[in-house]
Picture 1 (cartoon, rainbow, N blue to C red):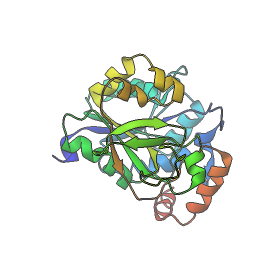
Picture 2: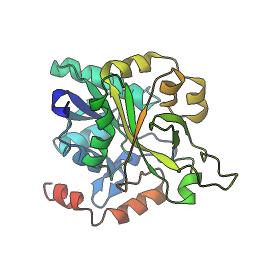
Picture 3: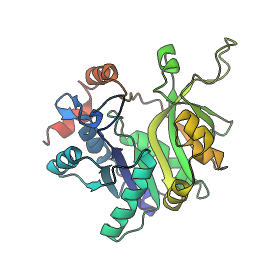
Length: 263
């Protein structure tokens, strides 16, 4: 099966009220707000039938509309990104009179995300119809990232199904062995459309609450999350320091050059 056989929507949930980094989606990266980079890069992804930003913030709505983008207003009360995505998908389906097959959540703090990342994350869902959820991972290259609680770590089984997610360093480094790879979660999650609604209706799970990672609700309810590996470098933005690092890395990014010329 090919992605053309599926109606796939990309949703970028965004809010300005982050406690760790207020206003993060509109933080400037080389002349464009971070949310603009994510949106423009996802609009280049041929796998998507539609791409929308889902937000409760008028500043973000005004900006996305100013660049001719698709935006849907959601409730202010959402705590998790998946809650916001589910509300958005339902509203968009009602407006567009369409039913999507696959929903892709792209975090707004992943300004270096590419179509290749999306294709890699989606691929297992296209090949395996029974699979309900998938996500993307990459190798952790530094001890700093391994210890950083803003970076979600993942351990997988022999079939690359997620075993656990944590903000703590996993697997344990206490014994000093390098037998298991150190892996981090990237900001692209993929769900069957009906499953994400079912998942969202379930109560937050104990491990999810403990770790503050909503994907753990999927695992705690007995479902698989298939992890795909990417070696294409990308860095998320969780702090002002990380924002500056990404600014430097994106100075010569060929994609930035292409979409900034169209402004």
